[in-house]
Length: 576
Image (cartoon, rainbow, N blue to C red; front, side):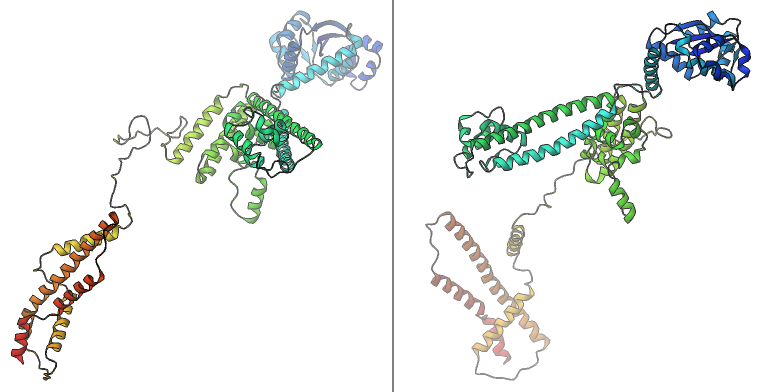
């Protein structure tokens, strides 16, 4: 009977000298207390050594998965024909029996025997020391763990977690240091803070300039733009700052050096983070960017943990406080967390940010799982998902109607022909509307319309019936005229008959015509005044008419209106 033992160095075949020991399961361990006692029970027949680590890893993974490797198959064919083989894995024993026709045994006694052989392995195998076995087992165990976890040394997300944390800390420190430099140097040159707004440029200009007196003789072209440089040099002679000593200036300069060095290190760290994100999570980087992707990984703890999260969790990751507060107070839950800072969400209008965040979270979850568990390192899935999210954004904004994807449910719909739908663009092209000039609102438009109406009324023929207001004026004029003409004769009033009323109506028509004539003259005089006023504005040499002439014209107009017609006087005398 032969015993197969798997070691980090290779496969070993031992011959069992006393097969009766397998029945004594409880006492087998006593036979392997010393190397001499172990040699009396088992003896090394042959040893198959692994050539490299890859072969050892392949053999170990095959044994773990209960498979027969090529090296083990050749070794058993050569050494175990017609023999009974004691083996540790019953599944592997069945495969060996089926393929190689070698009978295999697996029992508790075999397991105790293998345990004893491994305890004295260095003494039973010549040329194999305990130190070599320890180093081989350590290297093989690491390789086996990487293989079982699909782990690659290139995909180390711990570096990303540390890098993004350090980047955020550097940003805070840089802002604090920059404000301290501005406040410190502001006592000497306070105008510089308003002229140079960038913190790094401010520190570099302070380091170059030292005291403000040296600014006119220096060249700031490598640090500042031309316009800012001119403003800086113009502000030097009118500065309200105080003088400082050389020791103070040296301290400020050292502080500026620290700010500049921190800024340079920050740029290097950002470049490192961007390269690591492209190597570890290329699809996630394409969708949400390096910083947002790194913050998602850091918040989840690792890329594997993030891949286990559903899209709804990815959407609100980073807004846990707002979520639990909303659930406690029974208000609306947040629509986005860290994913809000992605460029695709920033492009969307305010009313569509929630929908785009939900779509982006769904595509981001798929990309994360491919990055964490997939074997490929390309960013094709991320590019496709980004195109889908952008198409959804255009659809929501009304730029174009979204087309169904290839995995749409149901059959494709055949759209009817529409003349307004042109080319490959899915959007409808509506006809352009004509410009409505009536909808325009202009200043003084109402006055012009009133003037036009008045001109049209003036041009109307005199045969038309006068308005009611003019009739009243004519009647009052007749009454005043009658009262002034015969104030002495007081006769009792009589009721008027229908004939008298008709005669008075016939007599009142010429008065109306007479009244309308001076009214037209008034309107014409108004137009003349307006034309004269315009002429005076154009030519200031012209003078206005004297006030006496104006008063005379008004009196003439009143006399013409108040003068009664001769026919009406005769009729009144007849009636009396």
